[in-house]
Amino acid sequence: MTGWDERIRLLEAEFPGWHIWRSNAGRWWATRTGTVLRRGELGTGRVMTLDADDEASLREQLATQAAFDLDLEG
Image 1: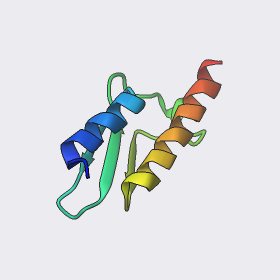
Image 2 (image 1 turned 90 degrees about the horizontal axis):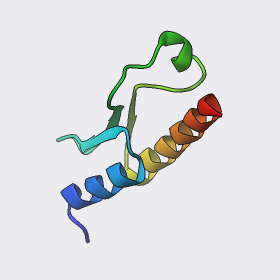
Image 3 (image 1 turned 120 degrees about the horizontal axis):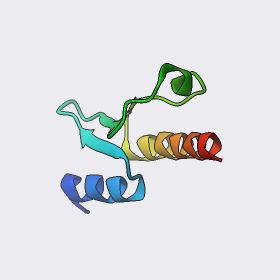
């Protein structure tokens, strides 16, 4: 099995613009990097920080955020 650091690196490569980590309690977290979003950009389901019980759940949430980002851009 791939180590935590490698799994996190792969997630960050898959979802650029996010810093990802795993807490000592075993929860997975991600926060946007770069420019802080304006309040109007966040009210549409977009968030600055995510947390999940496991890697798969975090990946799902990151994919949802990526879709929101595309909708905002397009």
